[in-house]
Length: 248
Image (cartoon, rainbow, N blue to C red; front, side, top):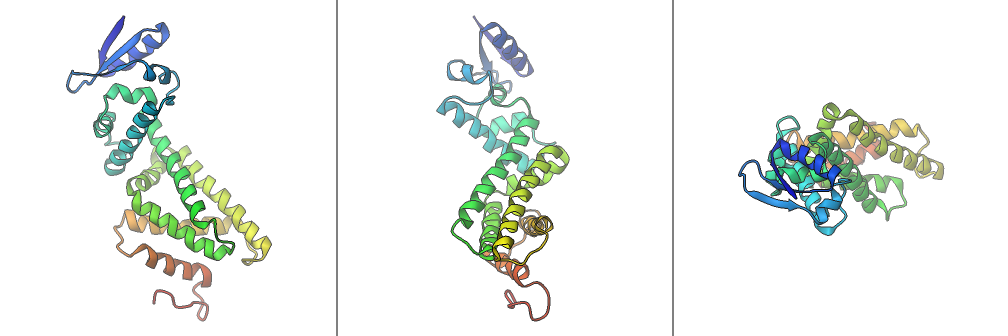
């Protein structure tokens, strides 16, 4: 026997259905039209929230991408689950198959940016053995990523106030990998010895500020220009005679 529920009742009905093994048909509360039957593939996914089929993975991905756009544009407090599901083109009840709440999808977006960005930087720097060259290309990859995903960058910035644990995990993961890389480079003699942890946070601060300049303050400087000016500062500092004059 199927249960039909709309709106908030859909979540409670789904919980009862899971306990009894009944199937649930969900409807979109905004239109009261049948949206889709949560059976078959979705029935198995509902127990864990993680997709077990290609269709489920595509639906979850559509919700995440919609949440990235909506929360990135509106901010966490203004964005609603309804606006996210409308953007994704799915019923509100479908959201709860994959995410327990708006907080959960927000945290997933913060973690996803970390994963995607680390991969992009790793790909961009993998062919460089010289640490300074790797720094330059890593910064270029970071700014290119931020340019392509401004909403996701805003979400990470907002995480400081919305989900502090996700925010701390995001930066601590980056800092640890950065510190280890700088320590190895110093041991190999490709950069001067120094406190690798402080250096890591300093270099991350440069990248973060340039990303904020792009996304929040609407900076119009080309990525390559920002990279060359910043890298000249990283490589040569501000001391007279130490700069190559890049960007002047």
